Every structure is written in structure tokens, then in C-alpha cells.
Length: 80
Image 1 (cartoon, helix red, strand yellow):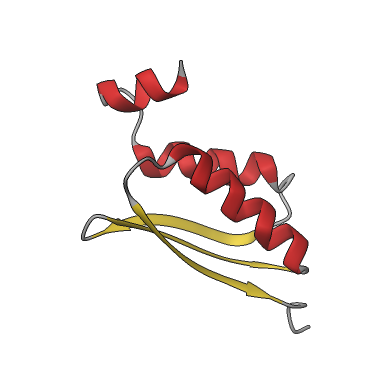
Image 2: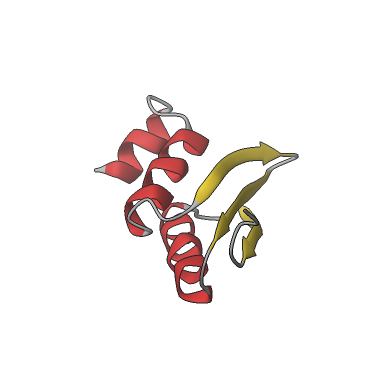
């Protein structure tokens, strides 16, 4: 059903990926930005663990079919 919506163009791809990444990481990604640059989906943000980074990538990849993904997700604690 989600793929049908994406293919029909009713829901923007980057918005859908952003929502999925937030869902799969349970909101643990900070400063999340998803954009499409020259046919490539770029996911940016900050997480506190490699596990959360993997969850973010998994969420994004579940929705991409045939598009390239570039992950610019930093792992580590935010400076105080």
C-alpha cells in the first residue's frame, strides 16, 4: 500500500522516508534532514549509537527501490 502511494506521487518520497526514519529510530535521531539531490536520497542527522544509525538506514532503505542512498549520519554524543 505504501509503495502504491509513493508510485502514484501522492506522498513526497523524502517526507515518507523522513517519517519512516523517525519511526524506526523511535525519534532518537537529532537534526534529521532527508533530501533528494540529483536522483540520490541523502539522509543527514545525529545519533548516539551505531545501532540507531543502522535502524535509520534500514528504515530509509525499506522505501527505496532503484534509488541511491547516501547516509551522512553522525554517531556520538552532542557537545553540551
